[in-house]
Image 1 (tube, rainbow, N blue to C red):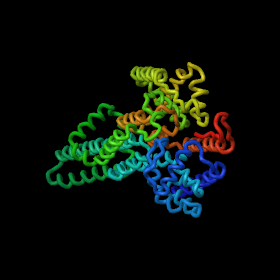
Image 2 (cartoon, one colour):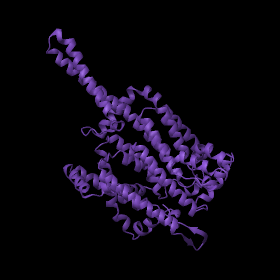
Image 3 (cartoon, one colour):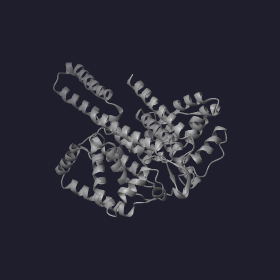
Image 4 (cartoon, rainbow, N blue to C red):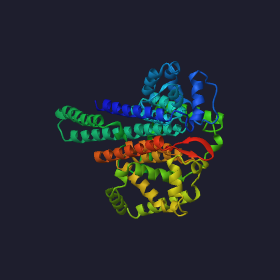
Length: 472
């Protein structure tokens, strides 16, 4: 009942806001001038034409095209609305305008996130073929999701290897305990006692497995280090190489297909390749750490978290101090040599990053260095929180996947942070309802503020005709 209530509330909120947006902003805005003609071509069944300014594949339209094509005209707005709501539950279609605007209105990011999370859920349920198909869908929605597909495959391998190893150890412990007990009993009672104890141990093990959700496969074992986990995984991979190769071959096929596409296309992006060249933007990792900590501010920006982190460092000194020193040096190195001011960033005042770059990061030559301690604290707080409930190898895989997505991106955009932020929050196991309530209120206030500015505070550029609006 709770899930239905949440779905109804979210649907009513999204539908009402979308109606308001369509009425106040009826004309194409920003990149919609490229996406609208493309969407029109798709709706009439022309799949051969492609606008060279569009960078992402048409994965979203591949999903919604069967719904939209029959009702794309002005005679069917109601059915178009229903189809749109069923597809994403985040966009309210209003006649032909909504049909044309779905492709480039930001719903691509929602579809991308939805596909990635569905892929992850299928992998946790060990439905690897289904997970790989969802991964392929995620990739044709947004190319960088190939990294998250590999991350999901890695979590599946971690599940299979470490959990099976844990089960084998527990079974061996059961057998050892039974043998020790059997030596002290008479031969007449050996069989009955052995079977009884085996049933008790097995029932306890089975109860533990059933009562533990899939996420607990990553539950941290604080007595083991990263190298221990890597060693266990490598040994398990070697002994079960053919079994695992067969199980995860669907992911391998999707990955090989992606490599073939990149070779054929000459780039990861489809269009506007000169504006989206791969650049070593290591400062992006620093930005993500701070944004993530602020997104979960009740957890990472509290006095209690600061004290706990300091006490943890103090207990592990001097190793922890050496780690902090290395992190600070890496932070200074990143912001000094690998901080990129993309032309889109410094020329477009319709987004938050423009003002953060101009008013905060680039306010003074020293500001980007003064922010490094905040970046380092944010990452240590995030990693410390994850380390309480996740395995070290999982945390390493998450960090590498996040870096693989963010470092090559020269442009600073919050939408690039969405998927790693979701993974971080979902695996932090936040059980404090006050924190959830406070985060919800913060997100609600921020979105209301942004939508208010977008809808009711338009402005004009001197060098370009038309109305401009502020958006994420």
